[in-house]
Amino acid sequence: MQVKSICCIGAGYVGGPTMAVIAQKCPHIKVTVVDVNASRIAAWNDENLDNLPVFEPGLDNIVGEARGRNLFFSTDVDQAIDEADMIFISVNTPTKTYGKGKGMAADLKYIELCARQIASVSKTNKIVVEKSTLPVRTASAIKNILDHTGNGVEFQILSNPEFLAEGTAVEDLFAPDRVLIGGDTSDKGQEAIQALVDVYANWVPKERILTTNVWSSELSKLTANAFLAQRVSSINSLSALCEKTGADVNEVAKAIGLDSRIGSKFLKSSVGFGGSCFQKDILNLVYIAKTYGLNEVADYWEQVIIMNDYQKNRFSNNIVSTLYNTVSGKKITFLGWAFKKDTNDTRESAAIQVADNLLNEQAQIEVYDPKVIEERMYADLDYLNTRTEDENRSLLKVKNDPYEACKDSHAIAVLTEWDEFKTYDWQRIYDNMLKPAFVFDGRGILDTKALEKIGFVCYSIGKG
Ligand code: UDX
Ligand code: UDX
Image (cartoon, rainbow, N blue to C red):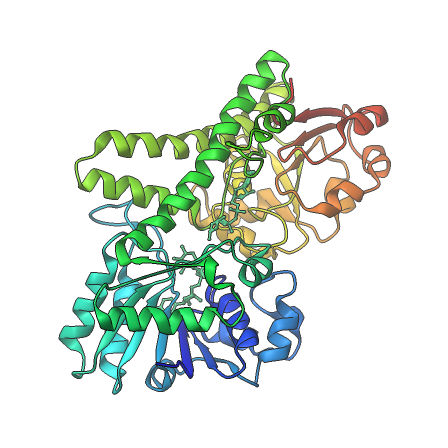
């Protein structure tokens, strides 16, 4: 079977870039991305490519090339489902905030809604592809809904987890380490797998396209994120020890990373990992393990999250204790709010927890981030429900100019590793701050020796 028309439900950080790249690489396939959020679709259709809802380096050019040719963004979900041979589900699967599995399990209500909608609209056979990260065996639940509520058409379910990282999504999609496709072992399942392999084979070398059974594929995604996050928590745990002993965590990371069995990636100590996936997927893994009575397995992985929370709190505690045990009424500047550089995404960003802790200590925070908008920061804080919306807006201010944000400040905290922070005129910043002028580098990106020469008092994660 040759796929001619693809529909993707969910025009978010994953659906948008992934479909844009498929459309660019496969001009013979019509790709329609749909979403229930009309303003998001309008932003994807904006003439001005600076206004796309997702900021990713290089994405604007790809959308500019393919949009209107074979890439379309629409709110008409039914029509796109009806037309498609292959439907990707790329809606969000947040951690449940209610009921059984609250705070741990993935909330699958949007996935179920999608399945029901696909079942009711479809008049021809479809291949349904799980792009969203899901608990193991979700595919069989989707299949069940499709088979029992559909109009007698045949559905094949594939799992095709996304491994792109935000900030490098386009590069990752162009040259993935691997593409993983899980499907049914029956002949029809294998045909469906082949149809999706053929789509990716338009630009991905065949040896990088891996096929497995559905459950291996679903579990591999959770496991990949858990392993990556575990590396960050491991090095972060050592950053605390380095600070006590006088070792330098960057030197330790380099020394161990040169061992080819360990490797050098994901060993950068930080104020804590964020992003929509790591925490959610590990909690999901922990929940699944507990469900099967594997409590030791659950505890083992939960420790990765506990260490991450510790790291975020350790950073804010250190600011308070260094500023003579009180930050009440003191201005503290945040450079960065996004969970990593080169993205406007803030989900689970360490900055949110650090800000919340410091606001509890009655600090006055001013934030500068090159890509995150003011409303997003307030939404992140309001979501925590720690204080009223008015209090959040009066205690935390957002600035569009970094020098303005640093003026008259007691301390600067670097929360995101944006490259531009390294190039600032730090002498000018120093001259306009209160003294002693403190810098807390939560990302280890600044040249602290140079800053100390200017007169700053510096703290850098993991340096004794
Ligand atoms: C994705 C994956 O789907 C998630 O499982 C993975 O773990 C993280 O990445 P992402 O693209 O980052 O999610 O999420 P988001 O940017 O929130 O986009 C999801 C979109 O789906 C939203 O625009 C939302 O409006 C849309 N949606 C949600 C629908 O169109 N229909 C629904 O029923 C629910
Ligand atoms: C992650 C996975 O990398 C990706 O494969 C999956 O599809 C989605 O989840 P993402 O969350 O977008 O991607 O970004 P990632 O680069 O993994 O960073 C996650 C967090 O870890 C960020 O907050 C980052 O700053 C932090 N991190 C990463 C570190 O603190 N140190 C490191 O060495 C690497």
